[in-house]
Each structure stands twice: as C-alpha cells, then as structure tokens.
Image (cartoon, rainbow, N blue to C red):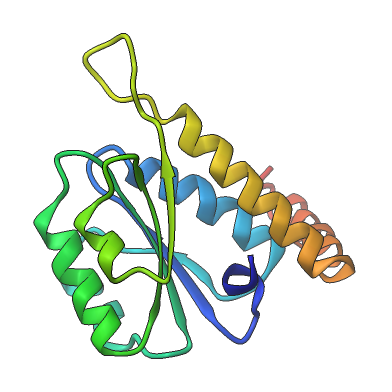
Length: 157
C-alpha cells in the first residue's frame, strides 16, 4: 500500500490484451484518491515517452498473466534499470516479471471456461484500493469529494 499511497510517486498501471481492463479499473479508483495516477498508453509513441520519463519516483503496476507477453518483461526490465518500482499482479505460475518486481501479488485464475478468471485479481485490486483509502485517510476522502464535485460540475457523472 505504501508505494500506491505515496503522493511523491507517480503511479502508472498497464496490462495486456485482457488485463488492461484490470489496470484501467485500478487507475479509475486511484485517480479519485490521489494525484499522479495514469494508465500506461497502448500506442507506441506515448508508451515510449512514458518509459523515457520513468525514474525512481515512479511506481508501475503491471498485470501479466499466462501467455505472458514478452514486451511486458522487456518494459519491466527497462523500468528496473531506471530505478522505478514495479508492482506485479499475476497468476499463481508467476510471470517472468516476478523476478524483478518489488511486489508480486499472485492470484488463482483457474476457471471452468476456456478463459482465465480475473475475479480473484479484482479482489486484490479492491483490497489495494481499500488499503490506499485507509492509509491516506482524510486526504483521500477530501480528494474523492473534490473529484465528485468537479465531475458533477462538468456533467461527467
């Protein structure tokens, strides 16, 4: 929780084909709780720009599950070289990124269908958000109120 709660750090979250949805879910929550949170761009130029600007103040939350994406590992290696912290959400078999991540949060993704279930990962995300709220306390509540006021004023609700 400390890495995600530290307002002196920027938080960027990203995932793959399906898991980018999990990353976006986390980002949407964290944006309401603290400044300096963004989604990792999919497009190559903005993604390269984000990587180029990464340093020790950055926390990257990466989602990497079975059929691990090689570009995620390479991206994580570059982040590690630049001093960024990596929080990895992965499956119980552990993404190769686990070897360089600061924090590894594995989940069981077994499912009766042909697709993995990300329900356990959603639970982890919910727990992370709850932990950030608890850690930030009144600052998170004030940010949520301000966020809601701006959203209503702009008819974004």
